[in-house]
Amino acid sequence: MPKYVTIGYGDEAGYKRTAPGIRDAAHANDDALKRRGALIGIAGSPVQVRNPDATGIRTENAAFLSAPLPVAGFAIIEAADLDEAIRLVSGSPCAVAHGVVEIWPLEGA
Image (cartoon, rainbow, N blue to C red; front, top):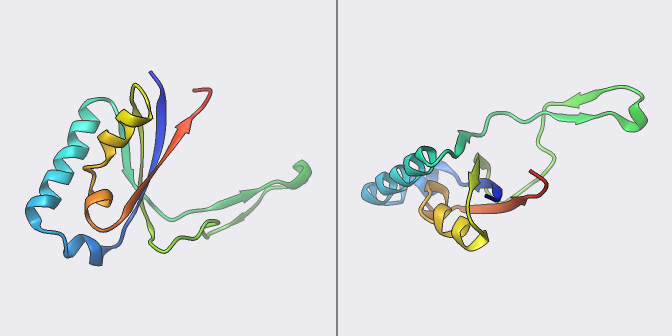
């Protein structure tokens, strides 16, 4: 079955202005995804890694990408196709709490 990497963006302000019942349903949605085998986690602090021309590893404690909302978490899910992946994550906390979820097909997995 195809795999997808999802990136959830959201902030505490959007989360708090979402009705508690909707937030609870969103967490239940994530629990259901976990029971299906999804690997879901909250984003920690990012580290950039570079090794130009294999001359030496350089790291920087910072995000490379920027977005209007902070990265809140990641998941790796399985779905029959992109339409199913969209349906599966559309009820997640970031999707319902004034954030956004990106879905990236994981090719070659």
